[in-house]
Image (cartoon, helix red, strand yellow):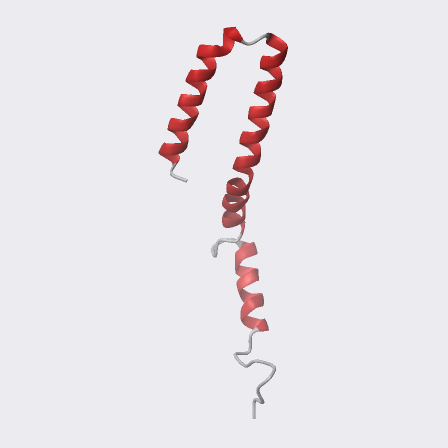
Length: 85
């Protein structure tokens, strides 16, 4: 998702929340706030995992270099169905 789109949705949601905040009773407001934060965290989790794994597995990192070497060493270029000779 486009970061600008996410920012605008967040701003609209916060603005609406501030406008109707006084009309909701405090206990219900707290439950709603916790639920919205939980939904936001769950929605952001796949993106955060993708970014984290991208940083860990990038070619310049030690982890990424080892993964690339394992894939090169493990792939001889021939499938197990074909005879090499």
